[in-house]
Image 1: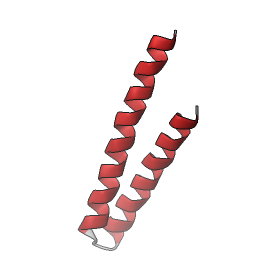
Image 2: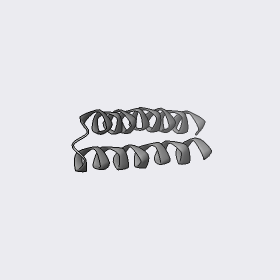
Image 3: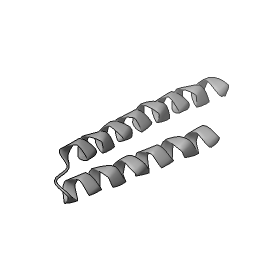
Length: 55
């Protein structure tokens, strides 16, 4: 459960970075936010696979 919470936190942090980067015209920060979101999505997919095999 902690991993899922950490992944969601990373996703939300990425969304905040992306929005801040967009608002301030900071392309690097915006890209970093998108990267964080993609990393969280990959981790969430891994958690779903683990859940399937636990059943």
